[in-house]
Image 1 (cartoon, rainbow, N blue to C red):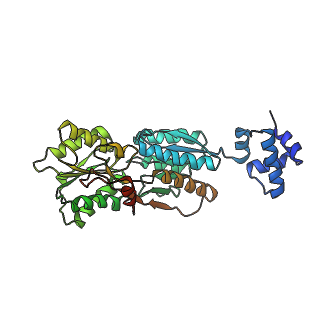
Image 2: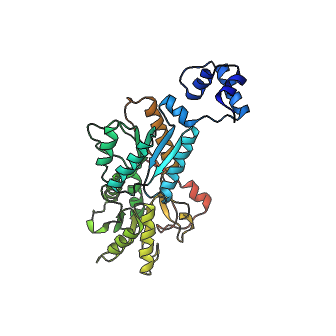
Image 3: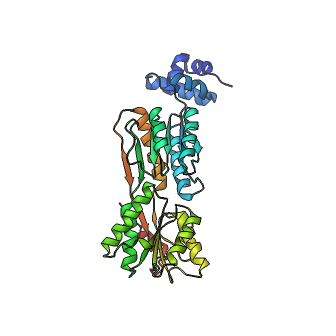
Length: 352
């Protein structure tokens, strides 16, 4: 196996120069750097990551803590994070906090103890313990998907990246209202999450824009997961005046809502029109095809990596919050006529 001494001999430089090229610990002339890189390639030299971390005080690893990794939305975010990390020579350590504040703090502590250079976290509905831990230990961190509105005073600056939530949800409501619906329900997410608050706000904005009153009996919490959404949908359908149209606030809750409709022998959109927040790979295979808001999930993951690397390079820089636009994917579960794939693509539009 080739060693650093072999690389130095082949490139005609000192071992110290090879170390500087590998660890970016001192500027090296472009020609010299290229000679070292060529020697590394020709000899098949593999740097010792542990030894490098002792020199640079960095492990070139990122901790990623997101709940429900099996959820297609978070899976795509993970893919975006992974691609961005690998592009810059970083590895990932992944943990699932299960949307539980106590477990969240524990898994973040475990990632921190693995000496990750920084973290990317989708915070829970009660992130106080998380924020406190990150603040005490000055851990470079980016929050994604859910924003933390009021970090504690002793916390470091947290960069954040997420999708727009208010306007896209309002768009789903006004679309259904434009089809003649006057009782439009919402299956909302887990209370306390910023995404839940913002999508409820969008729902209410959409009702107001359509000239419809807000009726709290048409809103039920599906807690961001399928089983609870099935129960929430059943509750809405049992009302004396049930909704004629429904907005579901994430993909897992869409599945729960569809189960509730099937259990009652109801059809979509014949008995109940449906629009959902979150598009997913098989939404186009349902019958009817699901009208949805598509989040830029991979872009969210990729932007989170860039924000974290910028934070590592400049720890005192001003914190940034990025809001990425969503796309409206117009299909048939809302009650609109079917359309060809080409027509569907032409009707995809960013909502910001």
